[in-house]
Image 1 (cartoon, rainbow, N blue to C red):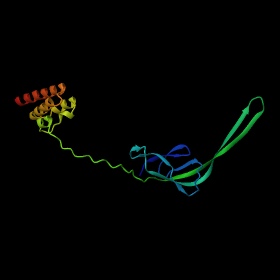
Image 2: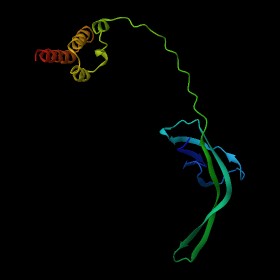
Image 3: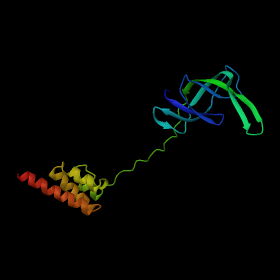
Image 4: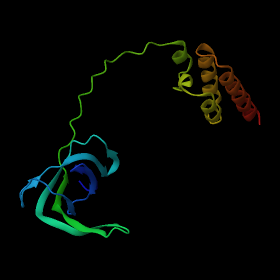
Length: 184
C-alpha cells in the first residue's frame, strides 16, 4: 500500500511514509528490533481511513542523544548567573512497511425479495418512467425529451399517484408543446 500513515509514539503524532527515518523520544525497544506503533489514520489512496486495521512496521535503527540545549538564568544587580543544559535521549526509527491487514467487512444481511405489486402508477406508465421518484424540476427538464405517449403516461401516473400541482402543470405544458410539435 502506498501513501502515508499517522502514528502515535510517545504521546506525539507523526506522519510517516515507507522508508522514512524518524527521530522520536526514547523507546524501550532494543536496536535492530521491529515494533508496530499505534496507527491513527491511513491515507493517500482515495479517502483517508480513520479506523484503520492496517499495521505499520517500524525498526529501531539506534538510540542517540539529541542536540545540546543550553539554558542560562540571570538576575540583574544581584550577580546571580546559572548555566545548564541537557541533551534529549532519542531513538532513530525506520518505517519499513505501511498497510497489510485488509478490513473484514461485516456480512451484509440478505434482503428478502419482495414482489412488486402493480399499482395505479405502474399500470398507468408502461413506458418505465417513474415520475413518483422524480422531483418537479426533474420532470420539467426530462419531459422535453419524451414522446407524446410517454408524457401522457407520466401525466396519468402523476394524477393517480401524488397529484402534485407543479408536476401536473409541467406535464400538461410538455403535452401541449408535443402536440404543437406534431402539427408543425
